[in-house]
Image (cartoon, rainbow, N blue to C red):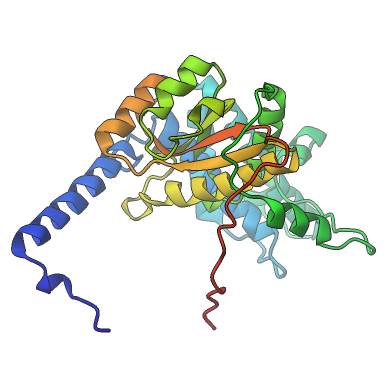
Length: 319
């Protein structure tokens, strides 16, 4: 079957599609870190995480190149100095400092030294605290008698649940699952996600009115999570859609972490207009540079609950 070309579409439809594409690109660009001043908090945090992680990656390679990344180090030190006046950047600044400490320590331990490295070691001396925050650690491998069956069983048994009991889910259980999901991979470790937790029934109902796929079971939802993408975690124009990829990965880990704790969940898409997205952000009292990508309805499943099979097609593996 021949695929239709965009050129075959009526001119009005083509204009509307391109107009919408232009609007959304502009919308996300203006809310990203692309046009933010370099000294503003979110842009500074993104650069600290990005450049520190680049050095960590260099220290984890099988063939580490001595004295690598000097231009990046100079820039990172300048960002660290600028961040000292902003208390909200302290955690990221300390991690960046610890990575520079690890860089200097590796060179010292392996017999590579010059004035630049010695100055770095003087500014960021090795310490137990630094060693816990940045650099590299040995990989903890599974025991010789371990296998993937436990993990596979958890992931393969997860299903979307739309029938919950009235037993309250403790907030600490939700937060424990979120902490697991927080270890999800992200571009240069920028962690461009946030989560809101709503457990008050009236607030859950108010938020669910902006989502169209919860009819028939919304009243049984105990806890409603809203996963948000941090658009200011990225500062280049070609990165504007990356927060949604990373927040999606985070969401996938989150629903499995909930399932491992016996908590059922239902992913509720938020394919909404920018106006609806802004209303959701406003109701959550979240910063405007966050964008909601999905809601997740949670609760303890009913006994003998029936769930959709949701059969999967064959894996698409492109060799």
